[in-house]
Image (cartoon, rainbow, N blue to C red; front, side, top):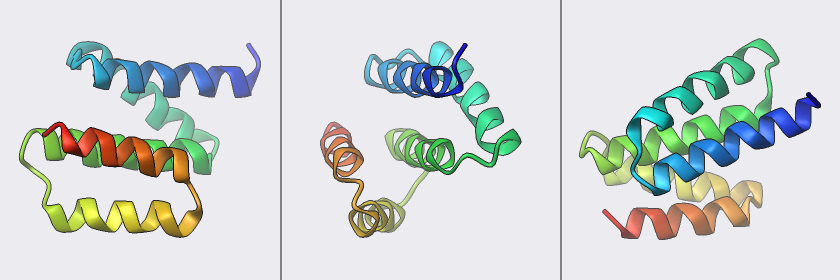
Length: 94
C-alpha cells in the first residue's frame, strides 16, 4: 500500500471513529496512527494524533479549555484551516 494512502486511511478512520463516538475503533486507529508518527517521524501523523488526543480528553472532561485553546491557536498559526474548523466544530459538541 502506498504510504500516503495508508496515512490517509488511518487519519480518516480515526476521524470517522471519533465522530461516530465508536471508541473501540478509535483506539485501534489511534494506536496505528501513533506508530506511524513515531516510526516514520511523520509530522502530519503527529499533528493528527495531538488533535485527537486533545479532543478525546476534552470529551471525557480530562483536558482543560486552556489546552484546547492552545491547540486552536497552534492550528491557526500553522495555517491548518481545515483542521482548525474541524476542532472548532468538534469542540462545540461537548
